[in-house]
Length: 114
Image 1 (cartoon, rainbow, N blue to C red):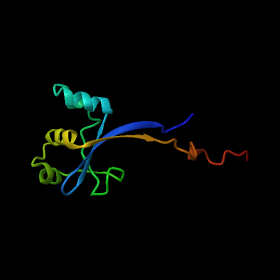
Image 2: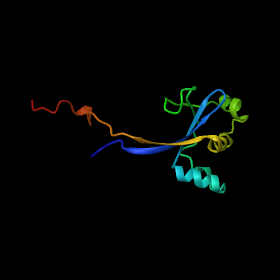
Image 3: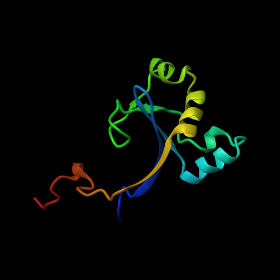
Image 4: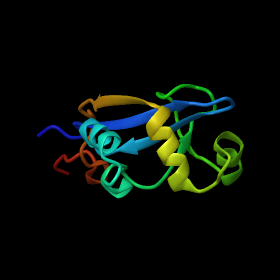
């Protein structure tokens, strides 16, 4: 059985000082939300966290955005308002993760008869 296969979607927003990323359920959910704003954000985003990449693009390690960073970029530290701006102005990216290789259970040792 393969492990770790799957896909995830995110929205990348390139700001003046930072790059911001939020994880979304899927591309269709974002497109539906853009057409119909009565859809709650909870049905679009995967967790209410905004990440920054420190200007290293969307494929780098993510850190959680501080309230001050959000205030500097969006004029508000309210995460809901910032997410709306990121969804409106960001680019959708869909990524598929590859299969993980390696040992399945390192705690079992060499599994040799003694």
